[in-house]
Amino acid sequence: MDTTPLANGRNLLEVRGLTKIFGTLKACDQVDLTIAKGEIHALLGENGAGKSTLVKMLFGSLEPNAGEIQWNGQPVRITSPGVAKKLGIGMVFQHFSLFEALTAAENIALSLADDTPISTIAAKARALSYSYGLPLDPESLVGDLSVGERQRIEIIRCLLQTPDLIILDEPTSVLTPQEADKLFETLERLRAEGKSILYISHRLDEVRRLCDSATIMRHGKVVGHCNPRLETPSSLARMMVGTEVKNAERTTAAVRGEELLSICGMSRKPAGPFSMPLKNIRLNVAGGEVIGIAGVAGNGQGELFEAISGEALQDSADAIRIRGKSAGRMGISARRLLGAAFVPEERLGHGAAPRMRLSDNLLLSRHTTDGKAFVGMAGMVKSGAVQKAAQRIIEVMDVRKSAPDPEAAALSGGNLQKFIIGRELDRNPSVMVVNQPTWGVDAGAAARIRQALIELARNGSAVLVISQDLDELFEISDSIAVMHNGDLSKPIPIAEATLERIGLLMGGAEPGHLDHAKEVA
Ligand SMILES: Nc1ncnc2c1ncn2[C@@H]1O[C@H](COP(=O)(O)OP(=O)(O)OP(=O)(O)O)[C@@H](O)[C@H]1O
Image 1 (spheres, rainbow, N blue to C red):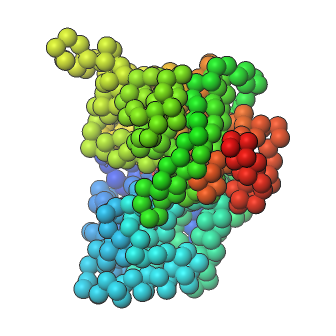
Image 2: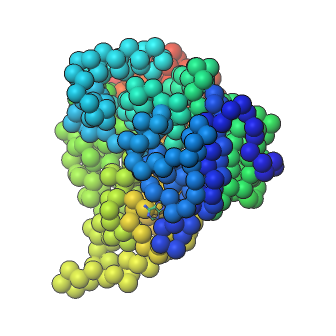
């Protein structure tokens, strides 16, 4: 591995010795980074390596403890995002900062902080979004949009400020392959226009395809540079993690046990003008198996998760059965009491309360289901037991953190995901339903999560995984069903599933959905 920065034309940004300390942890330790004009530069590293901390300092949302930043050859102090934007630095964050009750245009207006009329902003956003191939309806309410569409708003909001450097923190983790392709076209066009891009991603194949150079971080330090096009995904993973990374393995075939999760003709009207109806969904997940659900984002996967988890109730109690009990009218806690566990796609807010410590988050999600273990006589919390369970999860899932029991918001994105998945696995649920299990998780940790899901199933649980990552679904599933337009296809056993067949179902082109609908009728 090369350890000197690649010279690639004139430099737009040079960072020397940038350091950020949280408590006793050096999240960034003497980091050097050079970004040339007109290049797409990847920032790679395992979860908690310090990537987000570094870019937050470049965007003025965190103040460095030491180090220097030069912009166009001049030393600068980026004391706030406003200063960064004025210099020409734009950022698309890993966690979106959008108000759900406002429209896309209203959200954009808020960040522009001037008095341009909303109609002008909407018109500009619409024109820009279409010209960059990321179509957006500025009048749509954010609350009704899929994660992919929300990200589009963030990107357009950033581009409206005509930045010279665009920082993207894991932009494709929630996108479909088609959406990701569109984004790559947009980024390539921006590069051709002379813009620079700093690109954080755990998807190493896309880094190889898109990026001109890469800086690799480990434990807060820069450990090398490379030209990703000359590397393989496994050599990049090795540089990041420091050791070889193995894929998850289905070592034994699934032995289908009793049906533990049954969805029996479940329909749901669209919750808002932009959400998808669910159409007569039928699916049985038995103990021992992993069923994967593929689909282009926005085809009803989010609505399906809400209906199964109890975030949205059914008219009929029998529409969902968990371990034989009619659960369609039960809320999330009652379904959890039946032995089910749910991991939503949005980690902060939905999956964890950001300002609460990990142990409190654990108690919050499990006090009903683990009442005896965590709550004693007269409602006193057994804090020792809660702390012990939190530590166990942290160890099993290798959650890297800066304090013994930090707030959820102080974890890196991937480490929080590991904690949330670990918190649910720790209950040894009979039914586990996960939406995007490895969103934002590094290659090593993703393999660990996938292996844990396979093992949970092999130990007798029913596992349902909704994912936009087809490679992931092929790696862990015993059968794959596809959501299209609110309709779920019949699960295809993995031995008969090909990328082409699943791809056709995702596009609605194969009659699998129709056959299934006929069978159901
Ligand atoms: N506000 C904070 N307070 C305390 N510690 C923090 C804070 N933000 C980050 N950290 C810690 O700093 C380290 C680096 O985190 P960072 O988010 O920069 O990692 P990352 O490389 O972006 O990881 P990921 O790929 O998971 O997003 C982690 O150990 C994290 O727990």
